[in-house]
Length: 171
Image (tube, rainbow, N blue to C red; front, top):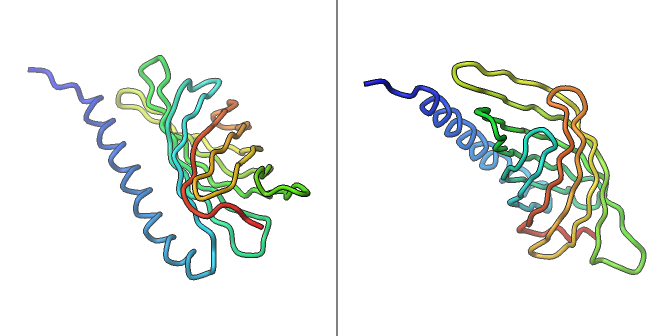
């Protein structure tokens, strides 16, 4: 009987990445909260010009009194071929306050992207830079839409939309 090792490797890699993200969130959570930060966790759906559809999660933190926020995210894309595509992102965004409104929050920024591409028994990591911008609608549940260009590495344009849960109405 022949066993499909591709599935075993893919499941092990998936479990490793999910466990790594959960550990990171547990380690960062208390230290960020101690720094009087505003923290939000989110879910997101993606479309990538090279990677097709994907799903992911993000952690947004804003240290009180600053227009800067950090956003860490992990995404699993599902290309049409037999390729496993994971994206890991660490970004710094500057959010703008529009006059006379607290209901729309545009932001711009960039950061690092690491893509993990694997197929069968071979895998490749590609590092690149993100240039991104988006709009968030602050509240206890905050919808957002974002466009990100990955330059160098696994180059593509990514359109992301999702929901953040937590305090994101920075004033």
